Image 1 (spheres, rainbow, N blue to C red):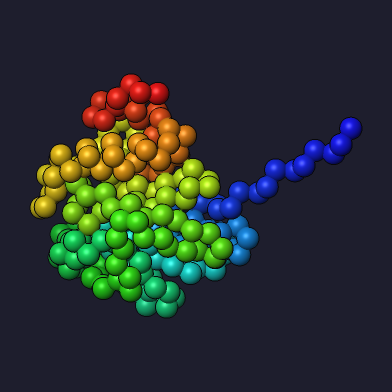
Image 2: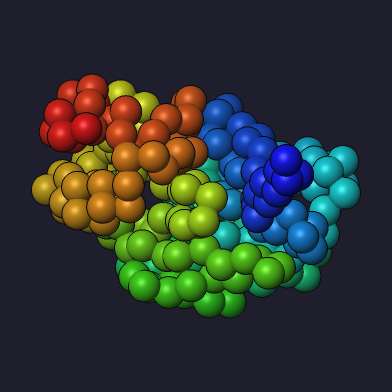
Length: 224
């Protein structure tokens, strides 16, 4: 009998590190081959995030931002100042939210939160690289006008920020939010990626697109 061919190791790894009093799901993702990492949505608690990078034996290469809200981007400027790595995202339509970060930080007691200008704005169809891996960028407005989602096709993994949650969807009552746009983003951008895709939302537990299509009261279509 021939020896079984061992399964290839996964291309990426990921850990979730909830930050700020709003318990936003900051996500550390990395290329398993090179151990190059990105921090997605560093809303705060920068020392803890850097410790997590060190504990995993990773090298920080990128900062990725899904959208410009304080709890997702409040520590991006400080993290860049401490590490020198580039900030990629969100879409330029969220510039006004990034500009508002210091005022929002004062309102929520998150001192030190700073605005910034990304090294690279992201658009629908862009690709961001991490080590030897690639993530696809999907522009998914509705929660904010410049919200983007990061998708690693090979691993069937997405970080969707505040577009979609387990059993719910993002708020659309913020300035320049749009409920119809949000529903369209979910149903036309996320659902076609596949029911098997696991996603990290901006808050709360992970789920899959298939599970949400079955049971989410806002966007379920019972198509699974």
